[in-house]
Image (cartoon, rainbow, N blue to C red; front, side, top):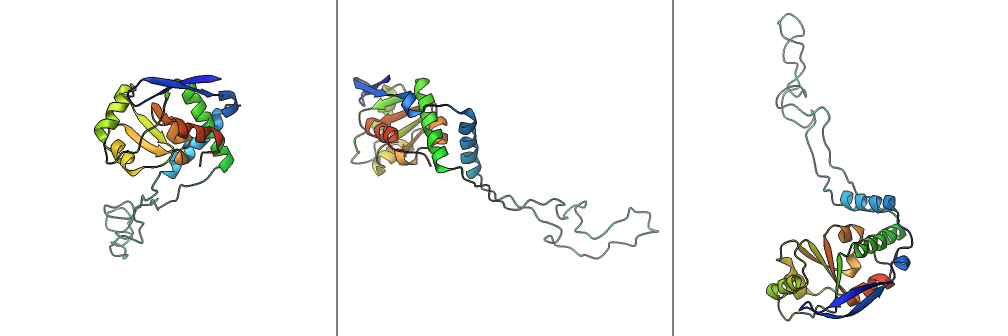
Length: 210
């Protein structure tokens, strides 16, 4: 069992959280973790690159001059890819890069990523992030400072709250996600995680990762 300190928003320790990493991720597969990360990164690609072929550019299709007797190299029409303003010989076309690994594999990858984050001492547990009556970026920044979270950090909450989201949004290098949207890529991307106790309970008990 691994004990994680539980802090309040002032940075004071208020308890301990016991987590069994062997039960959370009985095995570690670097290959599976890599495949999951590559999948998430591929799915972020827009695939909107587009260049014109010879049939799409403007210009006459008539042969520019006769084949022989001019002293010039042989040439076809102006749309040729070897000429300025011509179409691309190997034109780029829009492409859908998205693909999916099996859901259970992604769930296992998310558990492995969290276990590695805990082993690296890059997970901090907070007792709760009370819903703000209005966006309070200053208060959220003070909480992160009190918990010594100065580098990139992902705040993981149980339920999405608009004011809490707005409080985090304007803080540089900080991001907030509900635990239901957590996956291996989002876990490994930031340097540290700040997780509410209820969100960590939900992550451990359910098959989070999509």
